[in-house]
Length: 387
Ligand code: HEM
Image (cartoon, rainbow, N blue to C red):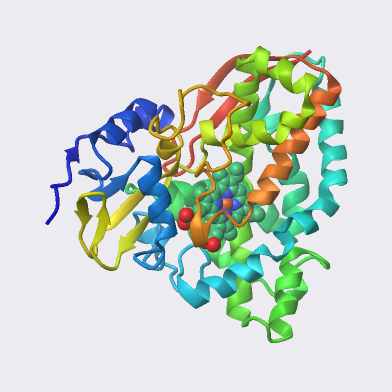
């Protein structure tokens, strides 16, 4: 039977916890390697080693029963890279990741850099601006939505759909989010090869369907994998990175002196302030976590951001330290479902910091506000000056 799994009375979906979850995360980690939550009624893993092991145990803890807590998000099962397992997952993932390899992305690097550098120049010396409105979304909205190649109406609503989808993964449903999700699926179902931009990622996937390498349904599923997770995640991650760099002038000075540290600073940024809070799995057999057992059929919450602050793995985990080796962080997950877009996310964050370093600015932080999206941790506003 094993040691009983401790129950903890923590509401991770209370607004205050969503805005600042780290005290609750510490309590959850201290309570045990696995705990039971009451709201919602699930098992939860928050320590680094059990979360890492669970993400790699994809045969025992499956994604095909949905990775959220709500029927609204888990419903469209079957053709969904995030919420599938085994061969189907591998086929969909191979299609989704094609344009996202470092080699393919390196071709876009110079253009991205120039675009973001122009933006940084325009903001430098101009006084306060809201980085969540004027800087962090710039590349995703200007460049990534075009690379995906959706018709204009889809591009205009990608941000709204992403926020709605990540909020809808939680246990409580806002009818507005459910409506947005329905619109997103309705829009996606109208896509066809003649409606997407030539040479775009979506066109490439339709091409693969036309040549028989994918079914049309698989191509549509792969296209939808760009729509929901590609924008908000990177926008919020950039907000955290800017805030952390502004809060630590000594580390900003270190980066300006040694730009080779930029990739490490990006990884430390996503470890320290992980955007994706959690996804879940279903145990298809009893699953052991140290001397405790999660029973077959149970839903298991995997807390990426909590694991990344585990003092059992990282010394002084609450501090932001660009000299730390954060390469094994779990902000992008690990195992077969590890983020398909992490190379793009890294690239976007690296060129932003490079542009700031090259512009030689100091960063000053003003007022900021955190959001309470059930799936994503990040700022709704972040006042910044570049001088
Ligand atoms: C900082 C930015 C990002 C973060 C923190 C992030 C986080 C994650 C995480 C934690 C997972 C693992 C899901 C799981 O364990 O079930 C994931 C999967 C995924 N991400 Fe990202 N992501 C980011 C950016 C992106 C971008 C830019 C794209 C697309 C271009 C993307 C596309 C995907 C897809 C398609 C999956 C599903 C992969 C699969 O199930 O095999 N993500 N992401």
